[in-house]
Image 1 (cartoon, helix red, strand yellow):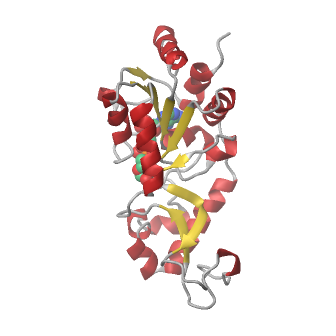
Image 2: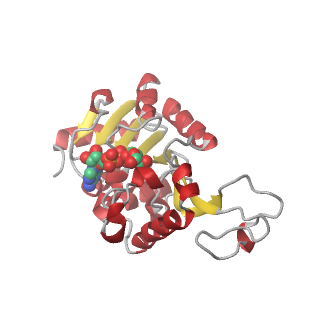
Image 3: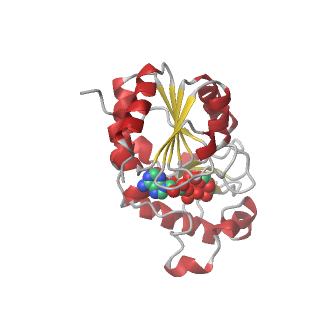
Length: 249
Ligand code: APR
């Protein structure tokens, strides 16, 4: 599915005229890479558990070994997937236009980074990263943790946890600040592959619009942000982003 040519051309003109471009991505940008969503990943042994019960600090403290194994399972699934044409188009655009594009993602899969996008603002953290559960004490060093499920500081027992934002947790403030600044100051915001239902991420599109930017959506389905947008490009990320971001012929 690709959007009609005149609308695509209009958004290309907005892009050409924009000094600063902000892009907000969600799970849809990774759909064509075959990244299983939170819920799709609940197969086999894991089908009996609810993500909402495990992706919380309370769930981790209650059953650290189980939750650690679940994250290891999700990390292993990511090893087998590759960035798609949508991720690559964004990375190529950033290379061709240094300093012009701010890429903000809700995804924790690292595929934008693997495609070569610089400075990705990861609102919901990074599935492949670890950090300590409790504030690190002088004895806590990521390099000297004792192996285990989860690995932990051999002196005080502080556990490693995945570096993602769990339900009920605040977003990393410096990342959110940078994303909001990019939204306020851009002339074009592209909203790609997100249902637009989770805040504060979805609020970035409202901020951009309020700041005077054009807002364009890339999504094959209706989203909750369609009403905020000046243009809705109905199509998938891997099909539309290369058309939108390719240099003019
Ligand atoms: N290209 C573009 N968009 C697509 C594609 C595709 N190939 N396939 C699906 N989509 C769209 C869907 O139509 C939907 O609007 O991607 C969106 C995915 O919506 P969600 O699964 O709700 O993902 P997202 O909006 O990223 O969720 C936000 O919620 O689950 C939490 O923390 C998690 O970061 C996540 C946040």
